[in-house]
Length: 180
Image (cartoon, rainbow, N blue to C red; front, side, top):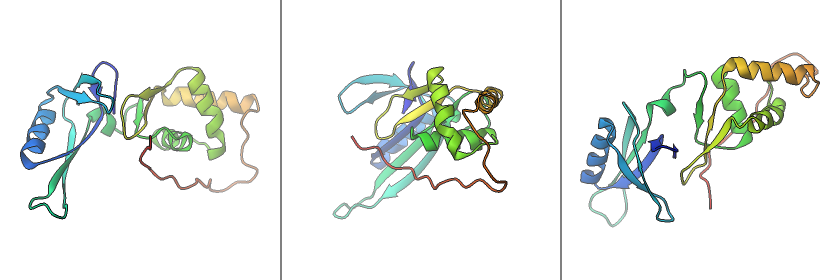
């Protein structure tokens, strides 16, 4: 998953010890690598400086050695303090809305999500990220801008405060692999 201009944000690869070791070293050095999508289209990408790398093993019956799994993410994807751009590995509307609320500490309810997301889409602030396996999005908005949108929604009566005071209940959200 990444952005245009060769900026990768999330890479998951499976292979042998040597291949995974070489990829982990290349990612850590900020080296560029070739990505080939399921349709055979190639592009050159990089995870940038200081990506996070996580390794694991997958035991497969009938194999003497386990397969190695490497998951690497860009510093930009892992950074949870950025204001102005939020990268997500799911494009489900409720997931996007709850992530914005959590990330920016917005005083909001789940019911306000569809309206605010539609406003962000109209303003072209939600960008689909190219990738396969997961549908990622980049949301370009600052906390101040989101609060201004909420204020506009409340003043125009597009949004309404809950009828009673108390904790806001958010539905459970699960990350599911994209099928297609």
